[in-house]
Image (cartoon, rainbow, N blue to C red; front, side):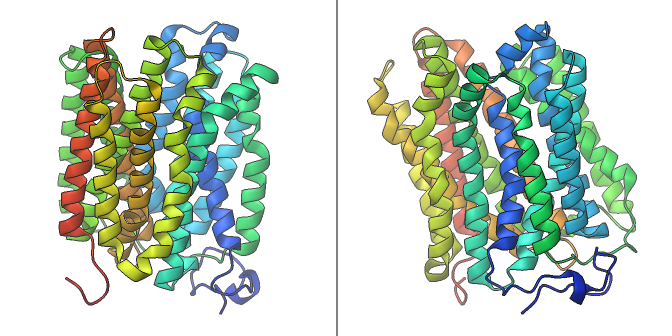
Length: 472
């Protein structure tokens, strides 16, 4: 069986000449797609330990240092829906490859940045490239592996890439910064990007495209404004507090932009996100589950990272090593759930993963005001394993609910809600840490909030994630 696409695929040449000949279970498309996703997630985590050094060498202000991180995050979260819509319209392989080119080129620009302003601009472009890569990655896996069992394993390995990149980022960043310099934090993307592009063009078939579908530019602008304003407000809430006028203004503007988006989608002949998709229990429920488990996991990682460095006095590299038990569990939990889903269906795996993660963070919350590090290892491992164990099933739920012609939009919706969940978790963690930095009440409260988010996700999974075929 080949991967040949229908007429209108994104390759200019005939599909039977451009598509590779591997069988349906060939790992080559998976390797290509996962390489791109790995780059994107690695860039989120590897920068954290490098930012203080970058700020010193480029004489950046505190605001400039913040925007080195936030510029990427805002562009990535804001343009995900645009990337998904472009993929469905012009071909997901074409947009995925375009994203890889943009991301790789802008990484080179980051590495060569002469000053902080140039670096921030390059990081924004990098975020746009990431937003083109991620929606297409899931859509291409769905295209390349039509068999449900094979696709579930592919989704599992795709999810494990996030854990691998998240766990490698702090350690690799610390190693590079302390040996060859911070510019190699970005240069490391170049060989990965080139390999990803070559593999994708050679091993992934052209994708169907729907050029007759208009690109709803007003709706795209509204969703970019909504997500960017919301993410910026949440980032500032962690620093300024939730009642700060800047935060309240950002949240109000985000709500107004969201209202404009909904109104536009109701009136548009070819909406960017058909509102009927959100009436699907599997689609909307799966997206909400993604938001909640990202809130719990990334809130835990952020809170633990600051607590280890500020209150326990660990260095950046020591903090990365201390967090390794949590993020290391994510490296194989998704792959394991991808193998089990054929026997059990997605629902038991998502529910059990969320309950395990909730138990882990609840264990941290009740461990006392100043628990020793060994007491925190099991809670962190439970949160990491449970989150990643549930990722495969929730991903399959959202992508399985996508109607024909909308896999990119469905992937973008899922990943946008996850980004919002991450930003919310970080903002809550920052606010709670500032409440009682000396006595440890902030971290414990943050973990309790994360446990509640996981419990809510478990309840949603029971209602929204399908069981085995033939079950309700």
